[in-house]
Image 1 (cartoon, rainbow, N blue to C red):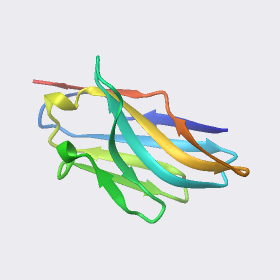
Image 2: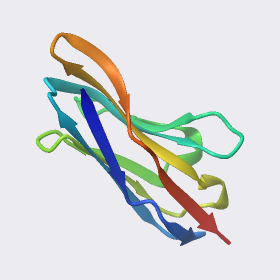
Image 3: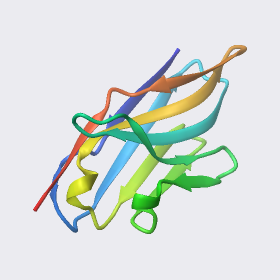
Image 4: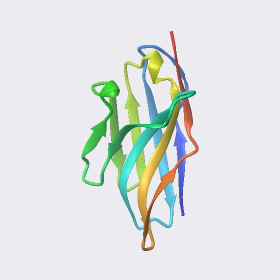
Length: 119
């Protein structure tokens, strides 16, 4: 199994910045893709950004130019630097990884961290 621990969520004013971090632990053989998703009240959980083990990134259009995802393969961590935050960025942010444990590749999720952007 893989455990994911997220940190960094907070209340911040519009225009401000936050950095989310997620650390993966467990009997991990390898981690493929690492990503951040978010879920606002009453909405579905959507991808915000992802990064594969080669360093290629994907961003949802609404965060391009404002958010940056990065990973440290040696530490099995992934971070999301969020700048120029907007009210619509308010959501619970979830870390997710696709990891190989033994011979099984599966997706794992963190417990979520709240990001609230105020005016």
